[in-house]
Amino acid sequence: MCEPHHSIVQYDPNDDDNPQGGSYILTKLGDWSKRVGKWLHLSKFGNGHSEAVGHVTGNMMLAYEEQFIKYEAKWWDRSFKQDGCKILLPGQMDCAEDYAKQTSIGNIQQLRNFLDVSIFKSPRPYLYYCYFYQYFLNQKGRDSFDKKFKYAFNHSFTERSSRKLNTVNMSKFVLGFTRKRNLIVPEWSDG
Image 1: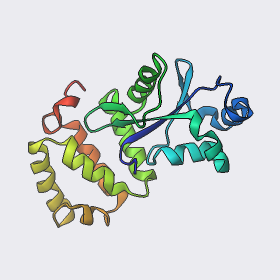
Image 2: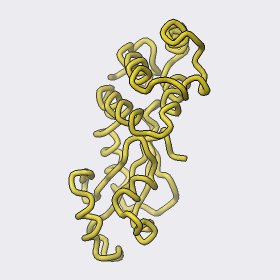
Image 3: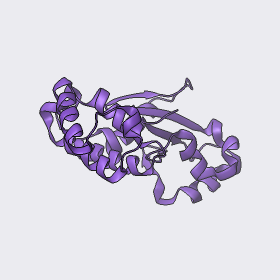
């Protein structure tokens, strides 16, 4: 399961080995992708790699599987890595990381947007709440979260309890903590 990572798929539209010369994918991508360097990058916030590739290729996903390089951004600590072991061309991973910085891990406003959209689109929004609590907040932040959560929702925060919460209320609650720099991990101290 890729969630709650920011799952990114990279595609070379000029690859001569892809089926149909890439024209099928290029017409399906439209505004949904972003070019960084010579590569196209796409992600479907609130979903993993397979959902992003499936959204573009439909039932032809397996035919294109070898054409995609997968990456994951850990938004909670701003780290980035390739998901898999395909050999990369020089600069290829740098372009994917630039895409991640432009869409989720570059600054706190991008993170807020990423989380807001992902929480609403995900079939498992509680994963975002739990990772936010466990990895994005420092100890002082978790203590504050616990206290405010109990006051707002009348029970303690757990994964089980978070599965039953109203997405709108919980999204607002979580995103409110992104504005309190002293409560979040140092990886986000620069803003």
